[in-house]
Amino acid sequence: MTLQATTLTWLAQNAYDVNNWDKLDEHGNNALAKAIMRNESAIAYDLLALNTLDLNHRNNDGNNTLWFACFRDNIEMIEALVKAGVDINNQNAAGATCLMYASSASKTAVVKALLAQGADYQLKSQDDFTALDFAGNAEILRLLKPLFKK
Picture 1 (cartoon, rainbow, N blue to C red):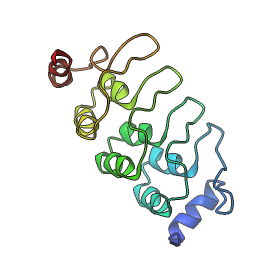
Picture 2 (cartoon, one colour; picture 1 turned 120 degrees about the horizontal axis):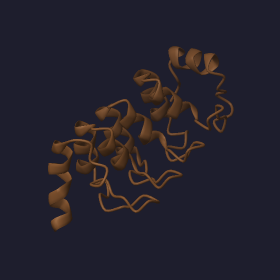
Picture 3 (cartoon, rainbow, N blue to C red; picture 1 turned 45 degrees about the horizontal axis):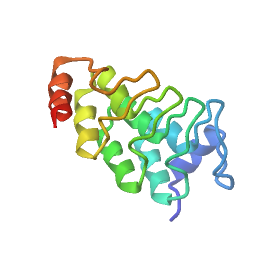
Picture 4 (cartoon, one colour; picture 1 turned 135 degrees about the horizontal axis):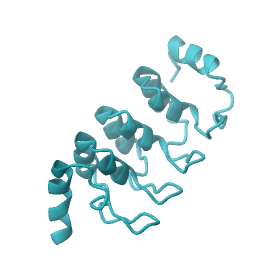
């Protein structure tokens, strides 16, 4: 698999080296995380297809690539990352998961996507909160509350 010319240009412009996939930016993000964070989907899919970058690399805050797809409301990328093997239940430095983040940020579509992909809604943050405790709107509350009654 060879990278597209646009991806090679993007890597060079962002100080990443195709000969050193361990290179990180000042926040500890690898090239894939940065492309997703910047909503550069074509670049991210090109890098993902390489199957070289660590999907589960955790940046300085403990977030993996999935966090940035959730931040960008990129449902297709969320599904692609989970299919590729990203840890959907990664807990960052504060113990927060992507599901907790999406719940707190009222990202209903992201919450639905994460639940459909098998995110563990019972995990707790360092402060002992679940995604239900973080529910940012009534629709998310309606999605999560019945799960805890099982």
